[in-house]
Every structure is written in C-alpha cells, then in structure tokens.
Image (cartoon, rainbow, N blue to C red; front, top):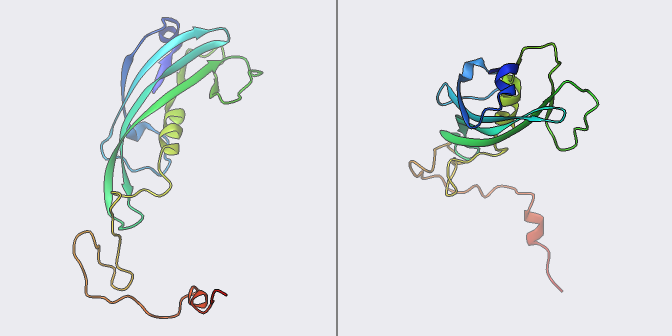
Length: 165
C-alpha cells in the first residue's frame, strides 16, 4: 500500500484503504480471503508524519492439536512514524525512514510485519479441541476411536516408585 506525501500532508482521518494480500511481502501467512482493509489516519508531527489506525485481515491457521485449518479474523492496531531524520529515538516506536525527496512510501512491508507478528504461537481451533489420537491419528473432534492408551515405558514411571516418608 503506497501513500503519497501530499495525502499525508492533508492529514486524512479514518480513511479506508483496500489492498490485496498478494501485494504483501511473503511472510508465510495463509490468507482466507485476498482482501485486507486498513482504516488509517495521518497526522503531521514535529519530525514527520504519524500514521495510525486498524488493519483487518482474515488468516487461516492450522490447529496444533488436531491439524485442522480454521480462518481467524484479525483486527490489529497500527501506529508508525514516518520521518526524514535518522536520529529519532525508536524506543517502543515503529519509525520508518521517509526522506524528503520521496513523493510516496510503501507501507506493505510494515503491514505484513504487523499481521505476521499477530499470528499465535500455538493456534488452536477451539478451547475444547481434543486433538489427534496418538495411536491411529484420528481427529477426536470428529469421531472417536477404539485405541487403548499405551501402557508402555514412560519417563514418569520412575515417579510412581517414590514413596513419601
């Protein structure tokens, strides 16, 4: 998504931008729909521009318990500062270099980063997910199986021999 310097200078408020997920750099994300919507506001600040708002996207995550794929709606906050000065302190701020000689800036990489960082480390389809049977691999959310729990060696068996005194 490209923003023109003249657009930023007009200090737009709650402007809607639609973009294709295919236009983002590849971060390994799987989108349920190819449509990303951004509602952004721009403000002139002392050292450049502040762009803030929300990003709405629908991604597909694979459940770590049952391996089923499920779409998730994401609404993510976005706040970046665009500046021509390189010496700006970046503590807890997303600062993007935007030299004065450039007429436009592409925020696609920043949007892809924000979406990518929102992906859960261990996504699950639902809290009550039963996962897969460790013997036959059946998805226990869909059907049950007749497998019996494995009574084999377990590293925890040693703890059964400990007696409290």
